[in-house]
Length: 309
Image (tube, rainbow, N blue to C red; front, side):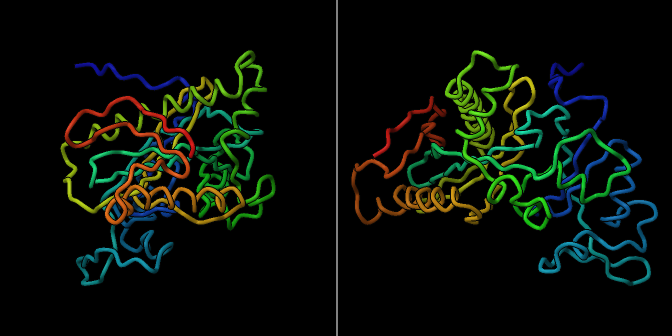
């Protein structure tokens, strides 16, 4: 049966770019970009010890993360090898919307609170930028050049010479981003607030759909919660797409904006998860949370915006 799913046109620019991520790691460790099956096989052999020619290769864990203790295997010569057999292969968007010719993505915090069976979406997001101008894929460019251009993770960007060249900590606010996008000729006549709300509506739908997709696998247990970091990207046609969901989102206060946002977000998180255990009250949150409704007992409903206190 032929699949009815079609990639967005912005995923293609005659480059056939794909991204490989090892599971169980974050901060950009082990990520590779490839544009052919032969290149993928070469990456698996060269960096993960998988496939032909892998016998004497050093694994990605040994190269990039000495603090992790991966599963050890013994080869036919009795020598220990470290391998990873779980990966995510993801299509790269080849025509992303750019911020001053540089790639960006948007981080949003989402709280799953098992005690009350609800998902909470924090009302503020922030934008992570690359320090390197975006360009078409160059097979002769170094690994560092490609990764710095494509990945906006703070862990990837902060060790690069371009870090902080344009924005403190390579981070800006959502308002700053959409003020710039509103000046694009392609979006003439659309205000900053209209563009921002279009993104937020799409993001809320993607968050709701992702939570619905795992609803049957979540075990409700009182006094437990988890904070997720949702990462979104926008393409040239202003389609919002979910990149990934992080179970261990970075809470590093790497610039002035995050030094303001993170303490307020954590205060709200504790207000929801801890305060009801000791101080039952209906007081509003100190900042603002949007609630997509029940997760466990009932279908997720529309977002209910709460005003700032």
